[in-house]
Length: 85
Length: 253
Image 1: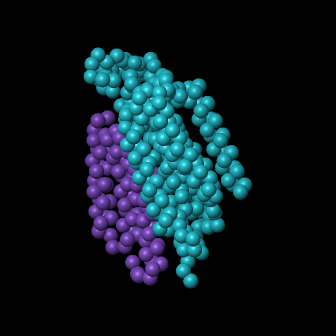
Image 2: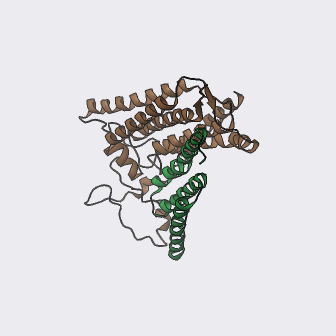
Image 3: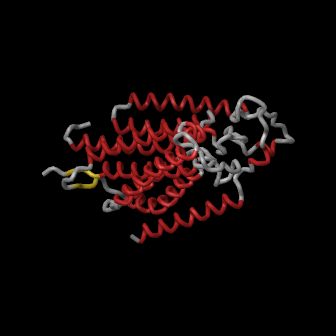
């Protein structure tokens, strides 16, 4: 049981680092935002494993839901202004 | 219109079901397992060796919920956030209110407006099914904030994202935001009124003046669930207003 949890924690940590790097490195802004959203989902798993369920619930709703919406909306607004992003 | 009535009916039914379930079958029977603490305050959880014999008594305390709380709320985080540091929570609510006011000043102008985006068939169909589920989950989270993880802020945000789903699914969907604004104002005022009643009754602002009841029941912990319901309503209506401001753009011609 303990080994399984350890393996899960290692996997979630590696996923966190991978998605954070992918969000930084990716060329298009929209791809970067989607990677940030996936990073939030991995963070939810990490918080639940670290026994912080209150933070996990908040992160699931705000981090991967509302923040993604706000970023996508602002990117749309920037495109409306005429620049090619 | 018919969709909204159906959704409201489902929500009402769900609330009745939730209340009924949690009143007849308590989620966890905390009153059987009160362990007296000799010293060190009420929030130190007793370290008990969980063996195969007494495993059944302790298995439903998953995330370190306390069993002998002074405030009467099973969730320790809630008892700090809404009871001991309720004044800080009032400050957070104020910050969120100011942010919502700023967004509506910047983006909710009084010009000609246009909605962003188009929606497909799958999103439309899924939104009709998902909207009541998300709304009920949000209401559940802030109603049970003193028992299970979560609380007013995640519950309210979940309600707001369920309305965001309706906005995304239908291009012509418009909420009557007046009711939301009234709910927000009433909830914020009642928060302060409850705090002032504590000031009158006991001596300090936001005192827990109601009886705390049995730890683990839905109607326990005094003013904590009342304040969390108010916070959930306020945050939900505020963020819904912000999202509906962001969904529309002014057209310059």
